[in-house]
Length: 88
Image (cartoon, rainbow, N blue to C red; front, side, top):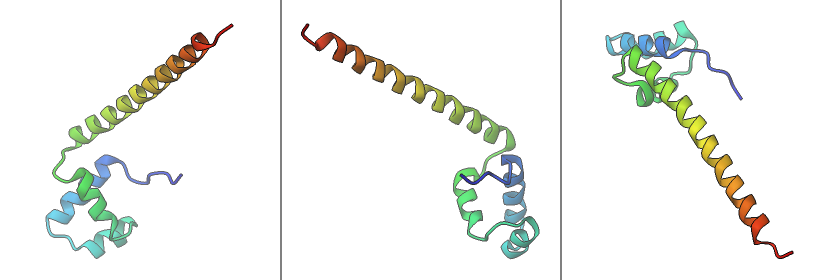
């Protein structure tokens, strides 16, 4: 998996400079990202503040933990049903 090169703070700073009127080609050349990447960033971080982006990252991590716990619980439930459902 490819690692991230930019933090949320850097991405928001780049988006703000683009909104301020800096040409996309100049930003892409200066920071070393593809021009199409800015549209992905706009979709995810458009109009956000740095604090909101940090909170989003925390919520995504918490959601990942909860999904993992749910999957483990469901797996245990199926295993218990299977064990109790057998006839000795």
